Structure formats: C-alpha cells, structure tokens
Length: 367
Ligand code: MRU
Image 1 (tube, helix red, strand yellow):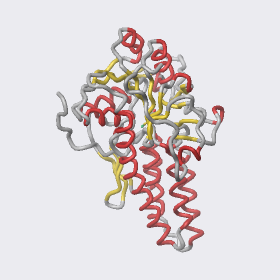
Image 2 (spheres, rainbow, N blue to C red):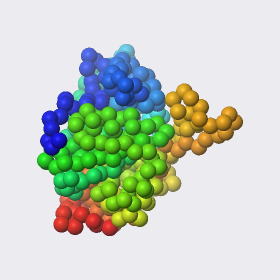
Image 3 (cartoon, helix red, strand yellow):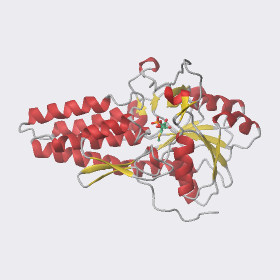
Image 4 (tube, rainbow, N blue to C red):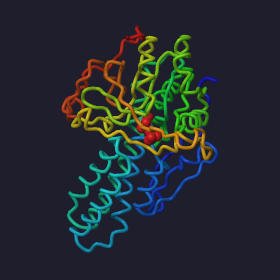
C-alpha cells in the first residue's frame, strides 16, 4: 500500500514526571512497555542490559542519566555537585565501549554543566541540554532521511542489518529514517531485514517498527544475505553506525562487514546512515574497543542451550567495515561520497560546506 497512514511515531526515550522513560526493548516484540528510570543508576543498568540500545539512543539516555544524577544530588556546593556528577559520568561512560554517541552525549552535557555558575544553573542547564539533544536527534534523523531518500527509487528493495530505526534513536531512526522519508516522498520501498544473531535486533525490533509503520518488511536469516543478493533482489543496503572514524572505517553491529563484502561482490551499493555525533575524529582504528558480550548469547537461544556443554563461544558485538566497501555515508548535512578522509573542521565547523553531497541520481549503481 502506497503512502498508507503511519501510526503514532514510536518514541524511544523521553523525560517525563522528573524521570527518564524508555521503551523496554528486551520485551519487544511481544510487549510494548516503558520502564521508568528515577535514578541515574537505573539508566546505567538499562544501557548495560540493553533495555535501551542503539548508538544515538544510548547517548541521549546517558545525557538524561546525568540530569537524574544532578536532580538527586543533595550537594550544597558547586564542587560537591560537580564531584557527584563526575561519579555518575564515569559510571555511565563505562556501560558500553563501542558506540561513540555515548561519550559524545555525556561530554556535551558535562560541558554545559561546567558553564553553570551556581547549583540551580548547573542542574537546570543539564536537563535542558539533555532535552535539547533528544529533540535535535529527531530533527537530525528527519534531515538525514530527506538526504538519503534521494538515493531510493519507487519500487526499490533495501536490505538493512540490526536496528538503526526509531528504537535506536529518540525517534524516526537513521537507516530506517531514510526508508521512512522515501515512503513519505511517495515511493514504495520494500525492506529485507536480517535477523541479526545473537541478540536479534533485526527480527525483534526492525521488523516490529517497520510493521508498526506499515512498511513492507521481510525477515531473512543472516545466512541468506548472499543468496538473495545473487538473485538481484536488493537495490541497495543501508545500515546505521556506532562509530565512524576520519578514515571512513565504520563500526557497526557484528555481521555488517560481511554484508558489505557481499554487496561489493554483487555490485549492490552499500550506504551507512549516521548523524555527525557518530563521527569520532580523534581515534585511530586500533584505539576503538569492540564490545565482547556473554558467551551465553551465542550458546543459547532464549533460555535453551543449543551447543553441547563445555563448548565455548566468541561473541563480539561489532565489526569494522573499511571505507573501500562504502558507497556513501548519509548524514544530516548530506551524503558523503568516497574517498573518505574527514577532518572535523570540514564537517562540523561553523561555516561548514560539506565536501560533496549529491549522488548522481541518474546513475544509482555507483560502484
Ligand atoms: O548492540 P546494539 O543493539 O546497541 O547495536 C546497535 C547497532 O549496531 C546499530 O546499527 C547502531 O547503533 C546504529 S543505530 C542508529
């Protein structure tokens, strides 16, 4: 169905009743329920346990976590309040290591806190900065969506991996935001979503939110990617990112790299959609830790063990896609095309002009 009406937009993280409310993503797709975080420690646990996940969503949740820490502090001096905030900052920072948006969100709010002259100013400054970030995130995603929608044609089938949607952001999504924007522009887009073993963000979350918005989605096993591409059924791949280095290396959910390799082999354009807050202009490839998760996520499906007792598993949560495999990076400032060699000044400076933003629409096969 073309342009069918979308239900109310899923809002993943929000500030309400002096608390942080977030969709409990561990309960999806069976139940859509919100958890209420009253203390920053609740946010720490929510990020660690993947109640909230996805790079932009954890950055915003952590920012709200600092607002909770400020609210609950009974410090009487500026120094004591800043030391309470530093403790919360360190705990929130240590929740997950790979997505740079977490550190970006925390640093932005701490930067704001440092400008406060007194307790009241610090506390209210933190909260308003975190709220601003949540609001900006939606705007950013919509701009990214408009920039990326030009790459899609009516009738295209797009493959995506993991969940880079409303559930990974405040709302609307990055990769899935591009698909939403194309749909809003009147194009019929079909989506092929991978399951994304072992945490199943594709089957549990991506199919849930696309179905919620009446977007045609088909779930495939991770192992079917090559087969489907070889049949010429995929027009392009769009994924999100947890961190993008100045060299153009993209850290994203485990499995992304092999999809990019298969896309290159089959001459399918491979796009990454991510906001500027996902760019890390300082780190080099070897500096970025790849989160290692529990063996049980691989050894079991739900509670049921699927490997013999005594067998070990290796469970890296992210991998790195090299720039040579990336056709374009869709941002709120436009679409960046290779060769990538980003400098912070050229991308986020005040009078920035993004290097090159228009793909040749007459030539969608850009490889
Ligand atoms: O482990 P997760 O679910 O937090 O991993 C999420 C991803 O890898 C997403 O693709 C990425 O954060 C981009 S979200 C817009």
